[in-house]
Amino acid sequence: MGVMLVPALAATLTLHPSGAGTGGAVWNFTTSPATDLDASGNGQTASVSTNGSTQYMAMDAPGISTGTINFVTVYAVAQTSKTSDQLAVGFYDGVNHIPAVGTGYQTPGTSWSTISYSSTTNPAGSAWTWTDVTNIETFMDPNKVASGGPGTVSVDELYIIVDYTPAAATEITVDSANQQTAAYVAQSDNVAADGFTMQRTTGSTAVSVSDVTINDSGLNPSTNVSAVRVYRDDGGTSGAWDGTDTLLNGTSGTFSGANSVVTFDSAESVDGTLRQYWVVYTIASGANDGEVANSLVSSFTHTANTLVNNATRGNDFTVDAVDPTANTSDPVNDDVLTGASKSISGTASDSGSGVSTVEVRIQRSSDSWYWNGSTWQS
Image (cartoon, rainbow, N blue to C red):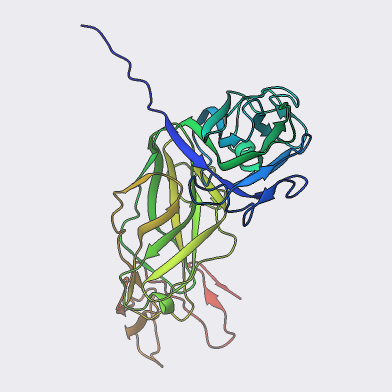
């Protein structure tokens, strides 16, 4: 059984002049250098009747910046009033010409015809880049060789076609990971409300992620959560949030309604490595007792072609803002205790997280000293 390799399909991009380039308008334009050469047959042309009148043209921006450029071709729909008059077209980067000035002449003839010049390299001899295409100028160089008086070289349309291989489509995948168990939290606590991973799962180009939107389905996120921060899990404790992880947003996010948009200080680069991230809430100092906060990473701003978001909502964190209560039932106030020992009983309760331990302190009223289990001390 054989294996057939299918090459990536090339694409093309056509760009017309955006206006006169170096030296301004040297030729005669019917209306404007920015529009006269955008299409053929519209009655708008550029023309010249003298040698040495090279016209440079700035070109439209490509609008894309990915993909490998194979070659770039400049085309001119031109005619001359004398059959032997010539025209060269090419590229200029501010320093270098291709073809070289005084070479590359072609004979369009007295009827409209298309001439062209193609190059696999930029004018400096290096591989084309999208920056080159953005900054490139084309040129039209007439060569009047006709005898019997001056002729005219006219151009009806000028354009370049960029032949390129598009970059492979990129996809990033987001999954929930290491989400914390449901718990009670106190006012002003910092808690890892959610955990998620990001990874480029298709393509070979790193993807930039510039922000993430966090959704909280609790009753009052803007009241109960005072700050939202996102960390990359690269600190001392793998798989758990701690202070050594990298904070991605120096300016904390806040909730507007149910959502908080967290903008990263610099775009996070996502490649083929699976990385863990944490959504950390600061519970507000005035958070409401008994209400819950939770986190769902709902959307991202990114440069991938596709984002697959498999994230699920994290567990609820319930605010416990009321202190527990405790009372002794035996002994009661003003009891006089005698004997070597005394059992102490009472009740303790908490409406939120409950009571885990109860500590008892015994104070002597005569000097306010405390019993440490073996003697009195201050």
